Image 1 (tube, rainbow, N blue to C red):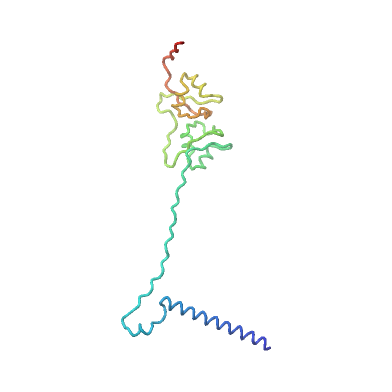
Image 2 (image 1 turned 60 degrees about the vertical axis):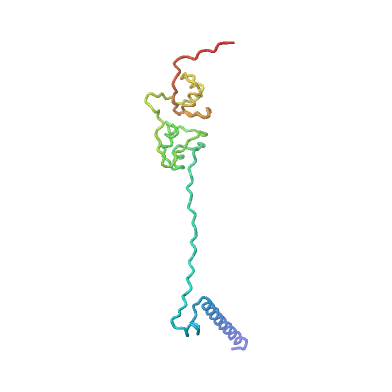
Amino acid sequence: MTDARRELIFGALGLAILAVVAVVLVTQASDSFLGFGDESPSDAASPGVTVPPLPSPTPTPTRVPTPTPTPLPQTYTVQSGDTLALIAERFNVTIGDLAAKNGILDPNNIFAGQKLELPQPDERVTPAAPAGSDDEVYVVKAGDTLFAIAQELGVTVEDLADINEIADPSQLFVGRPLRIPERQTTPPTPRPSP
């Protein structure tokens, strides 16, 4: 073996021994610092005196935030290509409840731009049938306007809108059932001319 090689081997061996000694010293120093070392001479001279061990550190519990349920939106505007079944599935409601909540008689008859009220979780939805059997219902047809329906039925536009909770007369859709308000039995008296 050459001298250079021998020096290299002994140098590496010396570094390894130094590393082991350093690890042992660091371990002993940390054990003494934490109270895990041998008893000191003063402890051995005092029989019956024991040093309680240091309590082990307990992990601080991490607070996990409680997830807040996301509320369903109150309304949904029908988009092109939507079906009542797709909308019901998207909002996890039944087609029947969605149709009943919105007075839809034909689930295949919805239109883009139509605003639908969504049933909320655990809401009991009753069909949008008239309250009494004596109530009359008019089903909106293509080309109908609230004014034309009111004229045809002999009621005022305001009464027709009020009883059916129609805030925007332009939001009248084919297939929507409209409750008919009580008709005036006497014709309105004409106003005297000045």
